Image 1 (tube, rainbow, N blue to C red):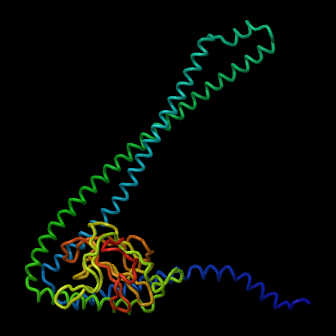
Image 2 (image 1 turned 120 degrees about the horizontal axis):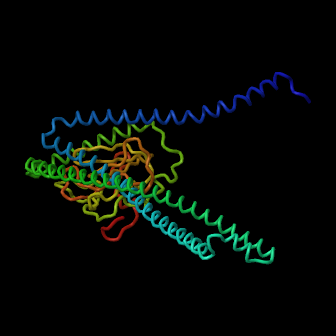
Length: 392
């Protein structure tokens, strides 16, 4: 049965429109995700501004500590990037040196083979072909000898061309090696300058900490400060939940946070200095764990998610908060530097920060906490089992 002409026309129009619709569908998610990221960062910026206004007037020393630790974080992060570049540059220089050795050995082999051919030709005399023609009686033998002689000549020319080519390659490698070594020296110099800058800032920070210690001499002052810091963190977490409420999570996230209970890796290798529920001061208790770790040691995300906050917060220093969906968040505080920004997606085990002592801490480490709709949860119940106090 034949189709009516108008149905055929409709089918043809539908087929011709398919590629356009598909292309538009592919582009839309990308633009949508970019818009969502901008919107999310704008909300977080607004939230940070609100927190700063709610803080009230900070002491001059507290402001100086914040500025100093932020600067130290940027310098430390730059040093980490520079360290990676130095490693890659060193590998490049090492590879070029090995290449130079190989090329030099190949050149010497070619030169030796050519020298052998030249010596053989000299032994046969300068007029080899004429001597072969005069000395040989059998035409077949003469023909074979002339063919062999012609082969030797061609081989000699080829080896001379190979030597010239290898000399050019070797010269290129040596030029490249000199250039890469100069770049390596430049990077090393830059690293030393940044290290000096970091040391100066750390010395300035120590002076600020001494001044702050004088401001909070008695226990009641410290307790009041800690309560204010915790209240500020609760307000931040609530604000972040509101900001993230209508932001979609990745559908491809493999394991929901709830199903990862007991399987989550600890964020850093170290030793638990303070446990969940342990008395901090007065009636105030630890709502997370404090893991003692060397300054600069990498801190990893414990589960896939999106960075909700990455900035300095009073009492917690350089703080990173990751949203894992379903109201679950993980917190990583007192870092030396942060590797991620608000809105970035992270995978489980991905480095997100470096352990430190920002926020006025004396010992280097990481404050690690888990929150569900703002309520503190004991990380030991969610992370992998440990013996004693060593983690990671």
